[in-house]
Amino acid sequence: MIPDLLIKIIAFVCIISVLVTVHELGHYLIARLCGVRVLVFSIGFGPELFGWNDGDAVGHISYQLLNNTDQGDKRISPNHQIF
Image 1 (cartoon, one colour):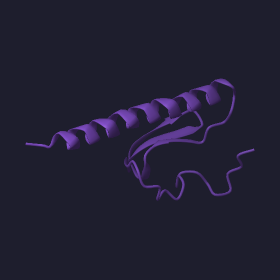
Image 2 (cartoon, helix red, strand yellow):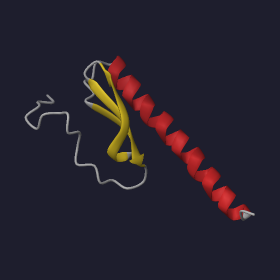
Image 3 (cartoon, helix red, strand yellow):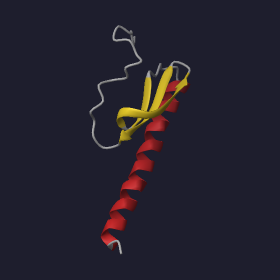
Image 4 (cartoon, rainbow, N blue to C red):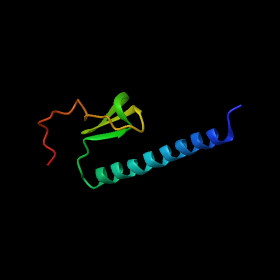
């Protein structure tokens, strides 16, 4: 039987993950509505599990949710001008 504390920790991590994702999605949507050019929207870090294109933006979901080892999106040229 799984200890009650472990179930609470897993539930907490799941709830926080959903809240943070919805929060960051809000930033993304408002930026797009205000005409800000968004290059990458990522849920997680590291190699992507799957991705999509939304106009100019590249979105992806990665398997590492808590460790920032991402070196940037390899599909964007290093000479790409943001402004």
